[in-house]
Image (spheres, one colour):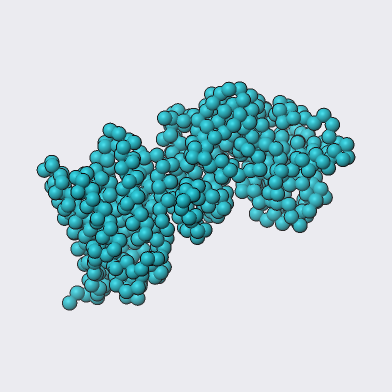
Length: 252
Length: 380
């Protein structure tokens, strides 16, 4: 049997973990679902790559994301939780479908924009926040994976910047089109309250109102994600006034 | 395309922040609820919000960009100073990226940076100005104009300056002290107060100073609030009946009310660019919510005036370097391009017509000087 609590966790961490285990279970479930979806996306991406090096790269990323999902599952087991995932949950499914539309068009750049700019901004920002407050190895795992996801983004940035240099207007229009599709769904996921029913990932009722108990909040996770997204778009060189409009037009 | 100038600012109230976000969100979407705005705005990184095209009455044109630092309106106090300096630094980096040749620091940004200019990012072709010299010019002109309209004699007046040791407060003290009977200086820093008082006394002026308003024994006829008052309710006990009160603090927090029923309160430090100003997207009335068109804070107008003049230099930097001569030089530059003192107003609206009616009834207004006259002879 797996130990109920990590031996390295402090007494404070142990007690806070046991009382807040259901919250961590849902946080881990969302993170694990996101990682598995990312693994599926990279596997799909490998199928449209012509260059063998790009194929290998995509498959390596897919493997890495599966490894992240396994790490989250392991963290759950450490605190006696089975972390369930659901890549068919309504929001995640829509995100997967959006990605597959770009795959269907064999649009490698669009795939990178969706996965690396939009989904990874959300992952990097939210994992970093969780990493700061989660106790023991749970926090360390979130922080480590946030840093690894950030490396992915850096890798994609050079490809995307080169693409933008060819035709900035066309590139920015493509990002906007994908933003309307993907970020609208992400914004609904990140809303302070799930107004349109259960997300199909949380194991019971919505975890968002309970996040305060672990020194997090839905508003903070959304804010940090949007900030990361805007900063990433800034790094691509898309005019700030344009991306500000995009973000202010998202649903809340 | 590179721009000539950049203006760094922030929203001074949640209401203006809501209006800005509503315009950016577009008319077809419902406005964001207040609680969502308060949750989202603090996370927005500094960025360009709109382009600003300005025109000089002398024919010159300049293109700029307004960059919002997105300092939350309820985080203007000392507890957030490091966070806010970081935001202004971020906004400065945006200005540099936009290729601005001169950058004006508006509102609270100017207060944050006046003693920390070395903390701004550097680029050879971009200079920063706090804009405080033109702010001082418009405050001084406003006080003189208000005195004129109210039939007051500056020379027989006692002037109280609250926030006297800041860059704007000390600049105003140097410009106004020689023309009043008695100066009362108030600020939190005793050492800086002592230094400023000594400087003014050397010029033969009658000066008193205090760190708390309650410590003054005499009442003021003219009050300049160069800093926002932490407790505006203290002011009424230190001013004489019918006093002229210039609110030049940021954010402005004085309004005509029951505490000061006789006071003639006006907002100071604002100018008008009479050649015209256009925002793209159109944020007219949102970024410049005033009862008159093309009215802007003096600190921002300084960068615009210098851009129209083609003088890309850090005209105002540091604290305590604003002299009557520098003010006069800046006023001349501004006036050459049709940038003048804005018509006077306060939270209740325009003031000058009502003052005209009152004073005309007493036969005071004869040969009224124009705004150009005030700018042409600022310290006369």
